[in-house]
Length: 343
Ligand code: AQP
Image: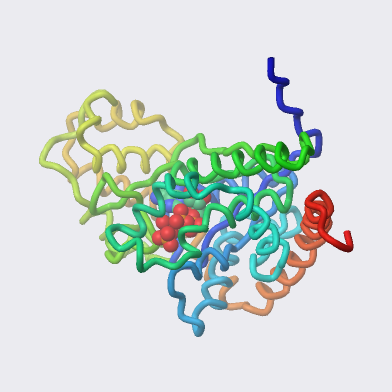
């Protein structure tokens, strides 16, 4: 009979990240940022701005540093407190790339070839994509495990990548006979807003890289723009149904009801009970009012931080030092475990 795996006995730690690859949108806010702020009160939290992930697709060098400050401003505006959580840019801490290389030698090509996000992002053009885009989930495993993080708040879209991180951690522990060396990180996906869909197509997730700006609500959109995007959001000709089961074949409606629920704290059924029988002419303006009420203060705080880039830079530099202090000795231990000269 095989022995049960040895449990990791280190402290709980939360790690997550967002790419500085464009404007932050409602999906990022509900799926990630809001949870980041909630977790910092009772967990040790490390929140990275994953610029090394962003460059897996072309990023304009003249804009990358500004986009990184933008994400930092979004973290801060969403309530992440730099005195409680570590906020830093990934490229400032070398442990990420070093551990990613070791994990490249642990992960299997077959595992990576099953990753659906690569297939979605590369479409029919996989041969022309960067090697980095293919290898992205291995770097993500290194991001998490360089901190021996035990919990990872992410949106639903990252579930498969998290499973890969667990597989890599388990294989490393087995291959080098170090049971419990790495934790098997748990995704924290539950909660409203775990999967916000495009406003133009309810079957596609809301995404920074969608060419249509009308597909998403950006955190920096003005109240007028938010209201207009919701008014123009794709819907069908029906009215609001009475039950959740009746939304199954109406993805756009389901998405808008989910967003309303995430903003108001109501369940999908409670939202429907409030609007059953009404047309979108009633529901959309109500949703727009709610969206503006919640997002206006976030956007205002974000702009205040962006007006003060020196303060953002100070927070990022301090965060990078704190992050390196945790990750550098962990990666040094990995080197030792693998038997490199001089360890
Ligand atoms: N639509 C979404 N609904 C809920 N959560 C979402 N997240 C992203 N989109 C949604 C969550 O936001 C965090 C940061 O994501 P990211 O920017 O690092 O990468 P991504 O998932 O690839 O986001 P985008 O917007 O789709 O970026 P691009 O277009 O640049 O690839 C993650 O926790 C993610 O789950």
